[in-house]
Length: 634
Ligand code: SF4
Image 1 (tube, rainbow, N blue to C red):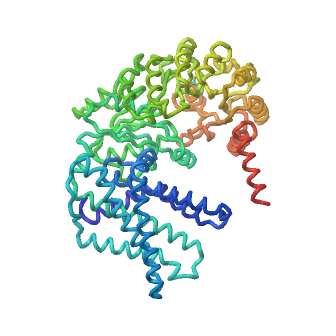
Image 2 (tube, rainbow, N blue to C red):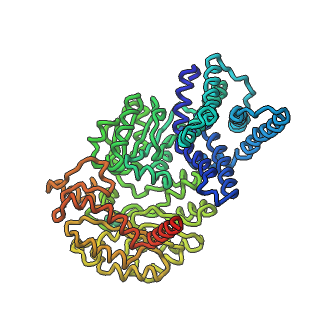
Image 3 (tube, rainbow, N blue to C red):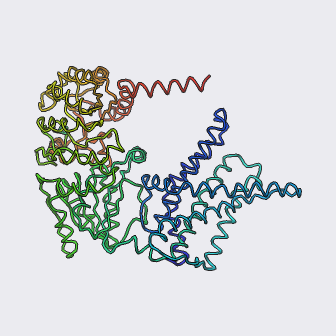
């Protein structure tokens, strides 16, 4: 990696991986100089500058981690951690060019010499010094390494000089071409920022390449790559920026792997070419809607000589499809087979299919790993039960979990919550239905009471049948339940039985729950066989009566593994087998009573209209939006 072209290419890949953060920093600069926000005055400018300093320090230090192979991916938690460690260094260093600039301006003005635009050179000096500080603090000190001279070749020198020259051109473009529209100045200033980052990465790479001990300390002979790919949908990509839950299966696989494996996680990130590697053990998990991305990643790793194991709900039901892209498939849950897989990998004897059985004790071995994990990972894996007592025909949970509900011992959960409650006052249990076993739920609620936390989870509305349990839930800190109502009271789908048989009591139960002081998030599905366009209004009225905190409407989707999928295949009604469309927002089957074209067009309207007109969050957002429109139109 030491030769100049590969160093350059590597620096280019790493800089590109930080584009989204770079854009955020750039926007802070734009906001602080925006004339339309000038009425907010100096406070806004100061806030933007402070945020910029914080972001820069965290970002640059995180880039050094990637260059050193300590991390492969830039993540927000690492950025936050690095801000805490390095913002002071960056803050004081960035005062340096300001000071030099002021002194120089003063001195030159006395000599009647115009001040040249050399500010950018001082900026690069700051970056150089900051790279040195980060490398020293992070690696040289802990590894007790002596300082060494940077081995800068002539090629490196000319590359750096060319980059500096280009930066000088970009930063002075308004002097060279004063008549250019301001849009071009913004583009030039973004490119300048890109070059700043690139130069920082390049200089840091040069420094680190002098210390092979650093790279060695952060790479292992055996590495396990855990991949949960980002789906192709734009909304999913945007959503993942704000809400990225650490996949529980990552914790499971780490817990069950030998300790000499270094584990690298790739959790719903924009995939970069330089993440691919040779000779690794790679585990890729996916749902149906992101399976095309998972297959692509699996195929590329396999092509490079890594061994790829795929698992998750989708490949459980389509193992042969997945085997076209990977070496092995886990059918079902991984807990019972992962150790065998690692052993077979080490013996170069991987089998094609491994069938995982749902273990009653699915938690003991993983619990210790979880206890040793940071709070942000524990909070994403608070699971009290696995499975569900109902058998809804559109749902994959009954078949995935072996048709039964398994439970974690309550003391294990209390232990985990005690480890994170100083950091998170509101936690979420990731259960499919926390009320799957009422006796267990009561035992859990009693144990949660003294912990003094707030919690949310998914549940079925039959919990409202038992006043005592509901009261216990409230007293234990229950802040909100997410209920899958799916249908409105009066829908013909009630005949299916199961939880749909409760539909006539939905409104009554919802009121009881709200009266208890517990908020409701409501999930509904449109597109059942008995649905028609008139039902939209019935469903709307129903949602309005429930008035949840959030109203979420999905389109009925026959997910592989559900009885619905099986039935629709039999009836030859599935019209679209592009798995990307299986995120519950696309019509993928022929509806019996509604025109498919119209249903497709109407659905987005239902999704947003219901949210804004039936939910508390929607009312608030709509109110804020209207207020803003009135404000700016005055
Ligand atoms: S109640 Fe929810 S989790 Fe249980 S089977 Fe029905 S949809 Fe699935």
